[in-house]
Length: 492
Image (cartoon, rainbow, N blue to C red; front, side, top):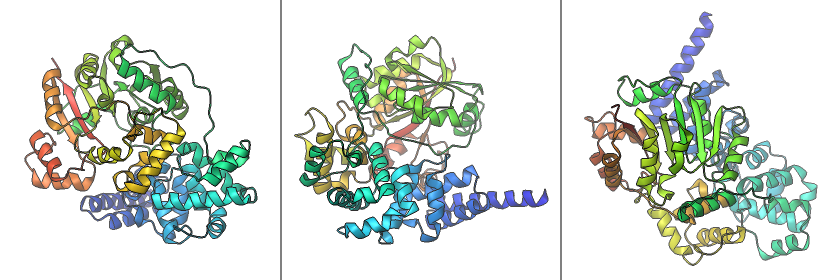
């Protein structure tokens, strides 16, 4: 017993020191400490999650001696494999197993029996442009030489990758001719995703809502397989942590609504983070909901085909409403937000994520290179042409976004039919209009949070909206993904 307690204390100490190193902006030291903790406790959720997070943010820190560990994490049911992907490809590029303008025959020989490479292609997306370019050369050689049949494991891994990215990788006329001449060729599945009949979509009165719904019926988003399991907690404990420890009066068995759940990633995250809560998730795309049901098998989530403007039809109110990446696609974001407030209990909280007008400037710049494509009918060829043009002319604007590496993601990132981003003053006006108060806003990393606290010691709860707006002026890409904040409806 004493030895077990001592080991647990050692693990906790290592993880606390790793987290502190991350806050201090020392990711290499943080990762070394996190790996040591994981060595001592391979099943420890906190250790696995910290290693995954550090690798996602610092892929160049992947080391050769951790190859087997990277492969294990790629297959770990508690880890999002996409978090490990860039670290794995960074390592393979550094080791010369992949190389831009390399010999595809040699790269094939290097990859064909490499467990890490096969796991990366099978389990995760490829979010490193240099790796994608090299891999497309390998795929091209396999097809044109017919050697794919002699490398069945690698061929199958390429097919798995295409099922994940939707056929996003570029190919030339020679490859296209072979695929056209032999459409039943098994290796064609390494180029095109299998098409299945689409179920009938919902019908919505508003034209913008219908357009957005049609998009996500054809291109469900996001594509995902597993998430990094969060530490379980309760809704009141989470809210009270944001509110300086003050009692929230929220129930442990909270009613949670995910408004605009897409393919279910956030619903799964909340169901695992708040296992005592009752989670309902709504969306306008039946295809997305079907995907969500498959991915969330085993979790207690009630999925419904429903426009969030009609949330009152659910017939109840909620303690927590999560709405991430949705409001800015509505015909009138504030009106849709108001409909959600109507079903939020007094004292209930909302977790909201919306596009930042400033943070979207790189995407806006990228769109200038594809202006003539943006209003054409969308199919796979058009999406690949969008990728081709941006890879050749403007990759700096989009190559860092995971969305750029799948067809579904490209559609959402660059060709979304309606987008109405926010800025801080607009969010504040919405709070006033809707009777909400800011509970806290979130910064992307621990180092960002520490820097903010050092510069604004008077605001430990991250509620100074003027400081928030000033911070974005100094770091305009800080919220390049989205603003994320929590707000609360008055208790009475």
